[in-house]
Amino acid sequence: MTAAFLITLVTAVLAATWRLATPLIYASIGEVFAERSGVLNIGLESIMLFGAFTAFTTAYFAHSFNIGLLAAVGVGILIGFLFAFFVVTIKANQIVVGAALNMIGMGMTGFLYRITFKSTVLGTEAFPTIAIPYLSQIPVLGEILFKHNILVYATVLLAVLASFVLYHTAFGLAVRSMGEHPKAADTAGISVVAIRYACCMIGGALAALGGAYLTIAYTNQFVEQITSGRGFIALAVVVFGRWNPWGAFWASILFGVFFGLQLSMQAITNSFIPYQIWQALPYVATVVILVVLRGKSASPKMLGVPYEAG
Image (cartoon, rainbow, N blue to C red; front, side):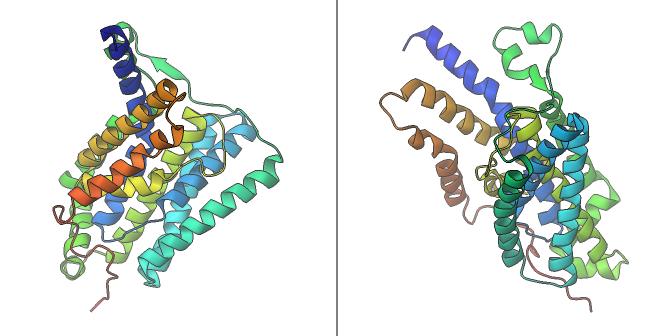
């Protein structure tokens, strides 16, 4: 393997890393808010699928990727609200509700796509790539960091804002208290129900945005199960990132490396190694990381526990 080929391979992998990590970043940072408030939403896969379908369908008929993105976020907020109704108000088991949500999303998005389009639609309005002047011309780094669309660049701003809100605002303090000691917060006059509802809707909005990215900013099409398990990986990212927005950001980047590597290795070794082996790489990495971190990451104490007033 020549040095030039190795440089080309590394550049290709790293150039794809941030793009491939973007849906994980949105979904995992949204889930950080939900889990910090004490709510575990394993239905991220479904919300991402609904976001992907809604964004694609709306952008296709409205001829506007901006409207498609807003529609996806709106659907994510609605699903987050409904999820909160079942787990916060009714106090249903959060795992069961999340699992049911996943089954509904996986089946319904495929069904809706088939009855809406009848056949495969290969393209729609999509976010364009923005090459930052001068910086995008830097060898290697320009390709890796400065030739992406606005949704990729926005992940950095999201991590900054999420970290600021969570650790430097009264709302963030309330969110963190819900996951650790909701009774104390309730005694202090902070509504546990309102905070958990808000965090579920934030998580839903960002997960849907991550799904929308796949259809109107990355592939420019919708196919059934387009998320390919990214919602479940996002749950692992939250653990790996220790329930911290910046931790989730960098953990997502790591998984983006695995996604980028498997794509490049498929192209290189397709003639003598089955591509399915490389496709499994991100998911094998997920299992390995969770096993390594077993018992080493302290989750919010009240994660998954319904709050009983009084």
